Amino acid sequence: MSFLNLEQLPFVGMSYEFVGETQGAPFSAYIVNANPGQGPPLHTHPYVEVAFTIEGRASITVEDETREVQSGGIVVIPANTPHRFVNSGTTVLRQIDIHASPRFIQTNLA
Image (cartoon, rainbow, N blue to C red; front, side, top):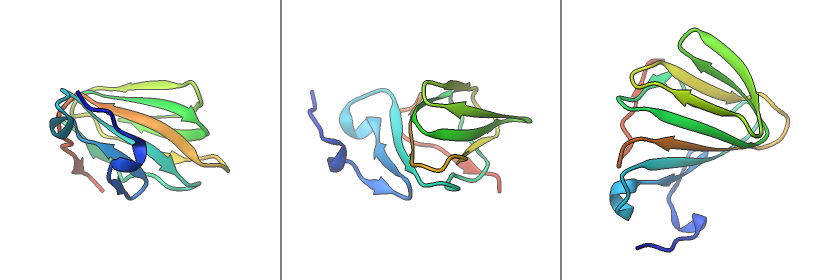
């Protein structure tokens, strides 16, 4: 059992990183705090990812489809599917991206 504060997790780029294998959990998560215009490059993972938009607005591309997602939006991204997001709003984007893996595996495509 672990009790953590967000600030105890490593902060890399625009996200706190919860690595499941380090915490004894079967999944990992990025806790995103992205500034306007910020987002990762197009990439894939060999497992499902679920993105929960908590606050702000994001333009999320999954394969060939791009949609605007606001707080409360949930996107399920199938394994091996090219995807990316960018903060398309004017405030900080807060998002929790759950990865169905105890560690992050990402292949950047751009």
